[in-house]
Image (cartoon, rainbow, N blue to C red; front, top):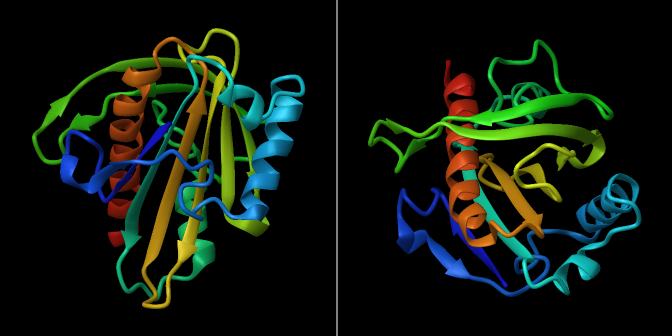
Length: 202
């Protein structure tokens, strides 16, 4: 079971969210992305798989899609650069795009309910990055010490026919904080997407 939201986390606008029990969120996770995800889970979590996680009573998943560039003529290389400098919500900004094998300390203070101006500090923990540049995708996999270990986030970019660019986020995990993470994860990455969108607008 999972939840899928468009253009805003659950605190921003509940009407944009729906329950979604599909593994690929109605085709958003393509076979190529799924292969990338399966490869990372097996490598990082010791032969784990989405199918294995789904059997856990604590399994949870969510999908968020946000437009980060509207009718944009910005080259995808530029959008990728800004996107991959922010692979996860962290304190500070990377000087260059993240690379496979690098680690970050995930830490967030999202402004809940876009525009309400209520930042909520949320501790995370260490994550390891995996990057698949050809798919415009990356994965943040939790490490021991992260409050949501074991879990991961996969994020990727899609250029649409109208030249707008969507950022997709899929989160999955097996911690006891399942329902909390579905809600707060959506809000955290909605906030991160809006930061990327603002950087691209400048």
